[in-house]
Amino acid sequence: MKKLSLVLAGILMCASLVGCSQPKGSVDVETQIEQVQEHENIQESESVQEEHEKDYEKLILAETDTTVTFVDGEGNEKTLTKKPERTVVLLNSILDLWYLVGGESVARVSGESNVPPEAMNITDLGSFNKVSIEALLALEPDLVLMHTTNSQTQFADILDQNGIEWAVIDASTKAYSAFQNNAYIFSKILGTEDLFEEKVMPVVEKCEGIIERAKENKEHPSVAVLYSTSKEIKVDTDDSSIGEMTSLLGVENIVKPEDIVVEGETRVAFSFEKLIEADPDYILISTMGDVEGVKAKIAKDLESNPAWNALTAVQNDEVHYLPKDLFVYKPNARYDEAFAYLEEIFFEKEAE
Image (cartoon, rainbow, N blue to C red; front, side):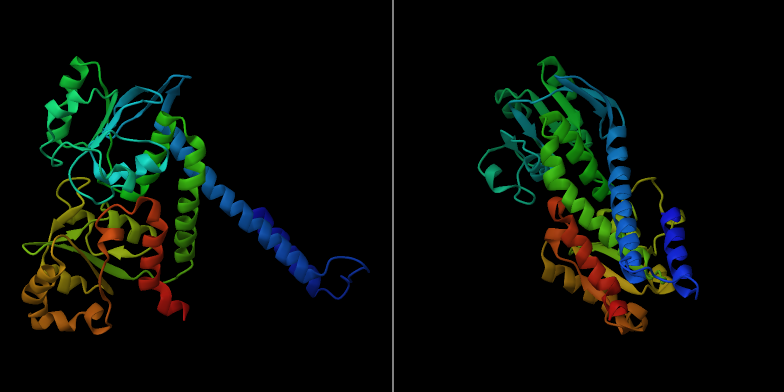
């Protein structure tokens, strides 16, 4: 990049000198500049892709024709047999990702979010925290993908005793990074690296393009990312799904490291006093459950306070309720849409 920039500077200097005449049939200066800039853009794109591929490679510790060894969701070394025939995915937020890179599941947990159409009618093993181990074993799976919660990892010994392979997958913190990492690991397990390149990398490249555009903004606005149900309000950290995205876009979270009690936690307790003190440029609200019920709570707990109307975000009409399908549930193959949505909120006015 630095070398190419020097070349570009040389072309401009040459064009400005009286003695630097242009021979007949040579490429004009403007065309040369365009060619150099195009080459720079290509190198930048390749550099971004290589960086991510390097990250993915770090997750894979060893690989043979029949097995793959990788770092699992708990940071442990895990070896699995490739191309399982009967898989059970106990986390719906990664179920569509498993299918995206060519996988299938014989069962899932209750719910419809992140469940692909092909998996709607497969066996339901119960709620996320109350999976029926008896029903699971009856399916005779050769691989079980589970979450890091104790309600699922407690099955590990039972699965081992029954000769069933399993792996812990984490998608709860820094979900955008996890989307890429998990998709890569899944493609290695399934032997479908081609689908990773075909279906995942284009999404990543679009997201990285938005992130790169955001870096061009000299201003770094501040944001409060509120997570609300009809009963409580919390604030997202940079380790949350939305917090990670806003951070990658150069937007500063009002939640600071000193506000985080447990390392890696995705949400902290809400404080109206801290919100007033931080006075963010933007307020984003993600909702769980009944949206109207949440709005009623926001109106009662926040909007009824006179100090709310004095906030910069409120005065500038920059309080945004975020769509659930992109920001409450994992967007996975739609991450580019989620980033584009945030880009429009944060930077469209500057672009105008």
